[in-house]
Image 1 (tube, rainbow, N blue to C red):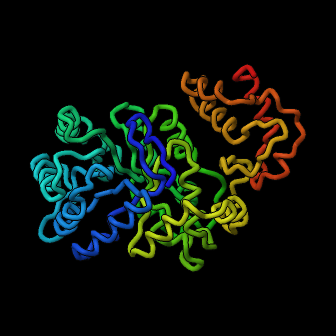
Image 2: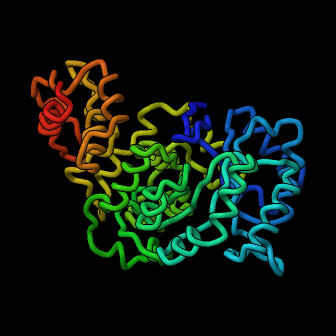
Image 3: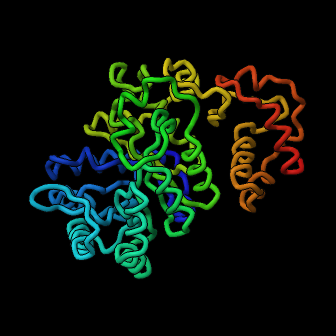
Length: 382
């Protein structure tokens, strides 16, 4: 398992994490088996959005004796009422639901406390000016949660939260189809066939800005919906008109700026093992660039995907990283100090580019790489 530091949280998480779907309706023995497989593979991050009491209790039992080996991303504002899940902003219910979670998980703390499912700016305003955020910050100060997060499907809300400096971790839906859709409050619009009826061109600028802002400010991203609920893995269901593979979806998400971990939506143990196998998959099986370039309903022409197809450079320039640092600076309108430091650490700067054009010939997205190298050399001074 390859590990990444999750932004400024400092948490070391495996690239592949696990959502809680697969734990539902499982016996305690089956949940323990899942944990055994995860521990053996080095999968250490688990998302806990569901308030299902049986799930929480079974997972708590399975964690006995190995709690410290896992990073728990627990959610505030998600409760179990009348036998079903409910999202709430009532502070009494929020407090009761979170305390129940800790009891059933048999722990006194969680590494990430995630304010659950904020998809409208009105809801975000209510959260950040009301008792929910106050309670979450109190938990953080007490060490009951290690760092504060927020889950959202709307880049407008996510950007507001990130720019406010209030969250350390963002749980966000990332995949090659959703990234082309504009932000909005209705989650169902991300699936709506009408929104894919006409050809889609390039990443939504707010989503691009969100990823780059997270990278710049040190807000780590944990990814949900990497497979689009499984639709992207099906020729008939994929809004792109053609299926992608598990490995391609995982690599795409992991290549976005700011991303630390992808929460695999595994519903069976076999699904989980397929996601874990990504870590040993050859580069050709993880490569998504050619597949995306050939999708019939979507085009990323001119947009750098940081896929690395431009390599190798005869001068040793890390072209994808140089482009990423260039885009981060252009989005900010200045060169952030952290970006300047990362660029300075590169062995070869963009100024060493001899304009041979080999990178552009290999790029599936027709990115003007040579022009980007000229701009980067001027911006960073080498």
